Amino acid sequence: MDYKNAGVDIEAGYKSVELMKEHVKKTMRPEVLTNLGGFSGAFSMEKFKDMEKPTLVSGTDGVGTKLKLAFIMDKHDTVGIDCVAMCVNDIACAGGEPLFFLDYIACGKNVPEKIADIVKGVAEGCIQSDAALIGGETAEMPGFYPEDEYDLAGFAVGVVDEKDLITGKDLEPGDVLIGMASSGVHSNGFSLVRKVFDMTKDSLNTYYEELGTTLGEALLAPTKIYVKALRSIREAGVKVKACSHITGGGFYENVPRMLKENTVAVIQKDSYTVPPIFRLMAEKGNIEEHMMYNTYNMGIGMVLAVNPEDVDAAVKAIKAAGETPYVIGHIEAGEKGVKLC
Image (cartoon, rainbow, N blue to C red; front, top):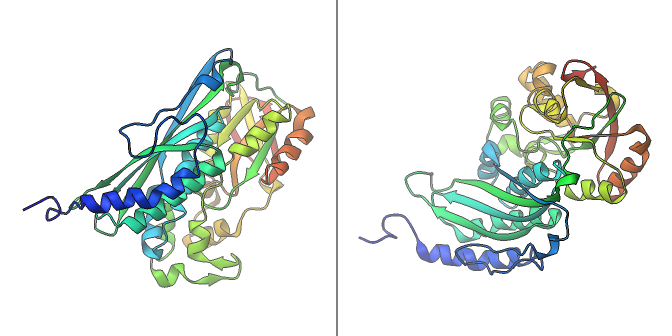
């Protein structure tokens, strides 16, 4: 008896590392001090010592049951983008600049080509957010995961000068809310998605005219990464007073997290076009509107508040970063919460 007969192939692990190196290399930043394959990743803070109060911000998350679609479709090169996005978007909406990322893949069987595909997506997410992929772990766990399944999670660290943290403390009635378009469902609510649609290859390969693509392609579309858009706003001299990443819990849970006491976010539902995937889901699943807005991003992946006089500059900066902005509402005085009208 040996480890391989027990289900763990160490040689496959070595091959996975070799195959992923070309993708990881593309994410490197000058501050990275170690090479892939060491016991830890090292990142120099020398560049940030001139900040008044350099402050580390961090985020960790996974892809969730969206992975089930990747298994069925046998498409593994985009879920890594989702994993990075869920971490770095949280850092960005606190005003932070992502620095580096580490991933964790746990699988039933290490298929090096599949692992390399997953890491290719992780690397692409890091490139989109200018974060270095400085390390990770692939754990082969036979008997714990089915052979053709895996889980994917990650951890990111960023930096911000303490004075530039986005906290919502300066929010005032009259401030304007700007939303940035999502790419679709992103990485939340897939337990409900999987109840609404048949999770079969034939179902996911079905073309829908209203989607302009197959159901699987629409649902598997990777989460938008808003790091460069928020940086563009900052470089335009616009102060973001509050910011919310619209993830699980949709508008009703996430928008209040950006508010201070005695402020209400008023959002106009008709201020932007809701992507057709959400309409299709509500219709097929007979899901009432409140539940949709309480579960999904409904087409808006990030919400931020700015002074009225900064709206034009913010919108211009978001467009310059390649994202689509909408003026979706404003802040009023009242009991802390969100009103959709």
